[in-house]
Length: 400
Ligand code: AMP
Ligand code: MG
Image 1 (tube, rainbow, N blue to C red):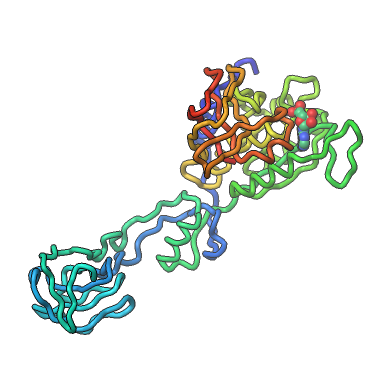
Image 2 (image 1 turned 45 degrees about the vertical axis):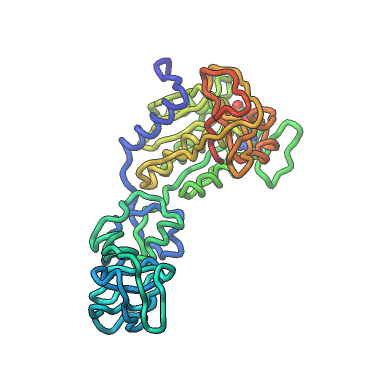
């Protein structure tokens, strides 16, 4: 165990991504209806089924014409609107009234905006020349038939749904959701249907983890709470290792009854790190046993939640077929000073203000304080090598 490193925040994140990328096998593929596809990971490459747009079309309301006829006076031979086609080729000296999105009549090669022509009965006059292709979106300007539009490995959101609908796809191939075992540990932890005694704590971590796993595209499988005994912890961990990923809360500190590491050793685990220089979340274990990756997250609820978002979520995304997991980080100026004890990367609860134009760190009482965290919608990320930030200075912000 002595050789297992404590990593910096960013090193640990890189380590998770590299290890999982190096070892994963892509999940099985299943087909789902378009209405069930949001949140899933695309398991096929998407190609254009035809040219986009499928014909030359107008980008403005105005008149379709031959650029070579301008400037000059043209006869308006009719109209064409979106959803219709003009029935014959345009003759020299003619124009056709055209609406945005309508297909250009054969023979026309430009559009003059309505505002730029003088209309007089069935005649229009153009004082200046119109360039060929003006206000025309040529056929296939956006994509050629057969062109690769999106590669497998992308999580499907509403924009990807728009793409699938555009391609006429009512069904789509996605990766099977990874199964993620959740194991809460601790003699003091009781389930929600019991009234906790003064020295007991309700099991909130299993519930928050299950919600985080679902949001990240996995299927949570909750194991019974492990008591602080080696044999029972081993047995429950062994069950958890039969899924695609095991997430454990608690039992990873250096205390006499922190048994996750000893149990993992007994199960033949290899460890990639056993600590990360971050707060909340210092004792944090990432390893693999029996072919399955596992995380031992510190049991304090804020630690559990933050460590899941930063590390386990990336692993889960990759195991679910995602190509490149990304942390939702932006940068924003502070509206109040921020100070911390350097030496660790600190993720401190904060609130975005001014529609995300600035960020306000919130007071809180440490890594057990869910009550303050509910008022935060983000965390400011304080670098390990710096102590204070003044109002107006920019900090990285992790959205929750
Ligand atoms: P541990 O990491 O096992 O030392 O746990 C640290 C603290 O986190 C405990 O004293 C509990 O108060 C809290 N805790 C541990 N597990 C849970 C859980 N499943 N739900 C809520 N709080 C927990
Ligand atoms: Mg414990």
